[in-house]
Image (cartoon, rainbow, N blue to C red):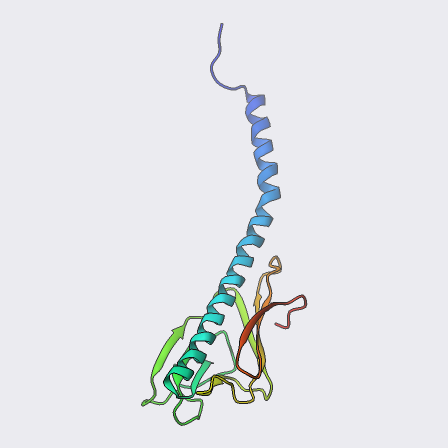
Length: 171
């Protein structure tokens, strides 16, 4: 007599093994997802910084990157969308006659802080590609404790950005 199928004990044993493997793997999966979000936010921020610098050099006009909640006034809260604009009068306000070149929506579950020499709430590139006394660091951190991908983007006096990983984040 041949039986087809599984016994209850065999089915429970398989379910127990699957449950144990899922329980071990799930926290690692969450950490992986959070790390990838932080890496993606770092790459997006680096891309918009490079765009700002390249546009300033190629257009010959001061170009500003700053967060704004209303698309007009620069804030010091980098949770808001980021705007790149030609700041022809150097007032760090998006005036009606100034062109918004790019807008980057803020990343969810990521905290960004900007610490610059002089405490400016914006990053501005001159036509030479240099910042005007604005070397500083962007700190990019996940808001989740499980994430270990806390990065920073360091901007030197010459305006060049580079990515660095934070062992002790300052978010």
